[in-house]
Image (cartoon, rainbow, N blue to C red; front, side, top):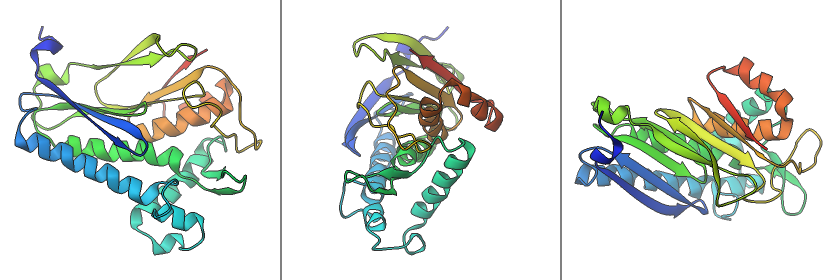
Length: 253
């Protein structure tokens, strides 16, 4: 058996969208110029996403949209796509997910942040998937996408990326491990950022303890469902299973 230590591995990290985004590659050419070029392209793409979708940047397209300065049909195509995904997410989750969220002044405005991070990481993963002979893992604040490019040797493809799930009660404790080869994973909870998750059905902020981790084919939808299941509780898991049974749920209490 070929072990992970026999395959060259390299990692990069940059601060974008207000959080560290790390890229991990396995393969024989992790230090080549071609590899560097793909990684640089990924980070350029993520910086572009931030410039368009950030609700914290006054010069972003989404901030202009929130101020009513532009309409959806006047902005770049990606924004319209995200608007449609937000509407679909609200529908399939039974209203447990929404992009219509209270701002700092309490006024509900369009905030696609719960979709954008997962979507951005999924798009970045597509670029990394163009890199021949390598497997990849990209992590943005717990939104994780993994996969491999063309002509990736079987011994590299078969090495799972092991993701540790943090205890909701102790930042220094890993209580579960998930192995990923392809697909995405996301976790929702209050232990890292405090009381920031909104229940659009009741107009309140749940104080539920614990965390919900969802894994499946698409990191964007894993992130959406992790939030929705945290808000909706265990009884809402049936909605996910009906929507796509390929997604798995781990609840930590």
